[in-house]
Length: 99
Image (cartoon, rainbow, N blue to C red; front, side):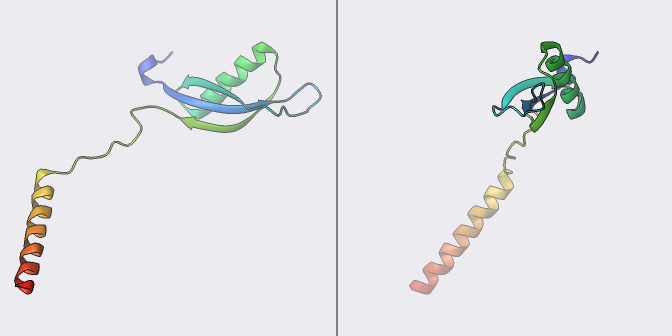
């Protein structure tokens, strides 16, 4: 069994089938921790089988780990200095044209 830190968290939206094969109108949502999407689906299927819901139809599966989201990279101080120098040069050029 894998450690909890190495598992990914998935949000799964799904619908269930009745005994007669009719698709349920309501969409259900579960949060499952697994190492891959396929394992998350298998875990959800086994949980639903235990409750006796029957078959399920997956509408959407989404990975929601915080470490996977892209963080905005901070700009280097050299980049800021470059933009300031370019702005000052542009303003000085404009000032020489006007006066």
